[in-house]
View 1 (tube, rainbow over the protein chains, first blue to last red):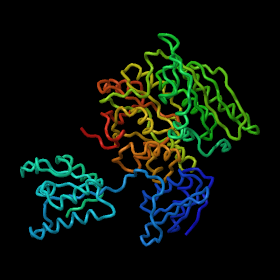
View 2: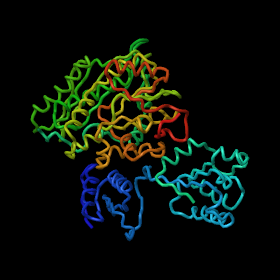
View 3: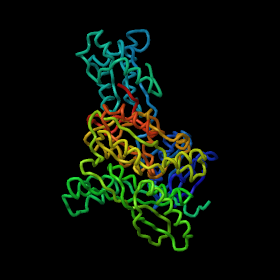
View 4: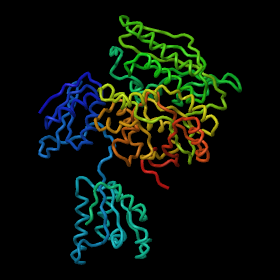
Length: 197
Length: 342
């Protein structure tokens, strides 16, 4: 690990120096004297998917950035800079109300899949339901409660309007909003990761 | 080459944050005069004082530390930037006073060149240099206090957006990033020339064209970057969409963001509108929208009906014009940065 003293330096220098040091080192600890520098370093780490941990020491701040070593033994803490960076977007796409080919087993699996989603540390950004998938967003069930939990925690849930019409379920929608194919295509196009159960 | 006049945070990135500022301004109880049409409360670019039915004067001042090596160029940029506040109110600059901070032991020829550069822009703007004030200081700072005239009926405030308006910008973004790259010695000659030319282009010409149209809100984009200026323009009354793929920027800026040549001012800008902007774009686009501009272009909110003529007019006058977004009804977020769609 390398320690850089960047006190007295104005942005972008602390980030530029830290970035340079990280070419050689796996972990770099940067000392800065202002919060904006901490925020810029944190922003840099987040964009690069590095682990970052910062703490205040007297008048100074120490920002420790580690290059993607998942075994790093310090806790990840975003103390500063709650900046809304464009994080990778994950979209879950459900084209059916069952998972896999056997309908009975598939129903159990789908229920379990959505329950498991609620238990993830990082929730998906969006969930898209089409074809028989809309049966999940329209039928009162335990799974529906899980979906409502996801919706309450920031997951955007949309169901295909054509599909709802087809199954005569338009009035039955229990969670999320109705959408069209244009929007579905756009959402898929914008996604960094698509998960299809 | 004279590196001596260089400073750590030149140009408009030396501006104090909007959040910090409003905190102080809120507690100031200023003298109220009904002739002051635009004053303290609106956080506009300049003050406007009505003399009679058809006359008002605009006063403004702007100064900052050097951001380029060449003192003449620095003077030009500072003057272009100071004059811009008059144009942002749709006025005509008439007189200017120099504001100078200069070290005792520094070569006075440098100061001469700075003031000469500034004056060259005043001459171009047909604005008379009428005096100034100079003090000793550890580091160089230069700028101008400019007074201009405007018919009160023509004053363009910075917060009159109307739903359905289009948002136009008259200079590309990325001045802050480019100046950082320059300080890191990583800025090509071509980029320097392009950006210096932009920084020394008077907003007078764009303003002259805009005068002919129904402009609902007008401001110049400076240290607060496009998004903070736009957020003030919307004034919690409307929301706006910024088209992520239509944002003009100087060529190499994408590279500069990849290198993380990000100023503290850009982060301060980001913090000052925290929670008010919804981003559906990449990191680069976020940064370019927060990039502090020194002597940036005009940002105007105009009727959609005027757009076609306006674009033609700008083209005929050889001026840059970029449609960057639209004003929509007040929504959850003040600004949405996303793709353009019908």
